[in-house]
Length: 151
Image (cartoon, rainbow, N blue to C red; front, side, top):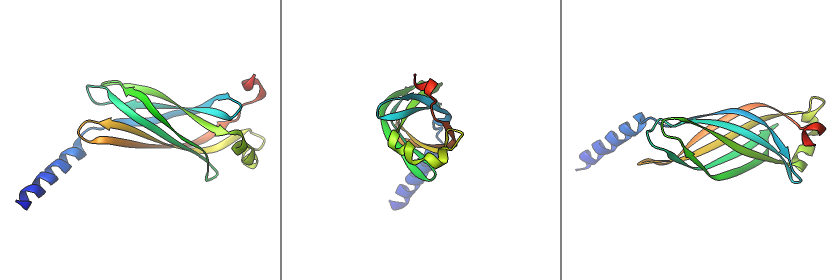
């Protein structure tokens, strides 16, 4: 009896590893706006859904780092669904408090940019499998807003 259960487990594990899964990429991270509390950046994602039906996205979590320090983190609950057999573009607002930017003054320097690393977790509800998180990360430079960007 235990041999039959082991065979069934192995069969299911083999089938689950060959199932096509959604793929995602971070296309861009750019300045969005300045508020009283923070500077907001916008991460643009492309998510390809290989299935013939839409998939719900449970949440998108993010961590923005600069110089090895976390300067912003958060979650975006229930951002929508992935279109069936298509690529869905998603916008993820990333907020950085002003006091954190002040502490990064030496990295900012004369060129008014922050070297960053953005880590995202895109959690999708896959039928049969359950919640599946696609980890994403990118590195680059974010320009700080100038006075003309604010007004």
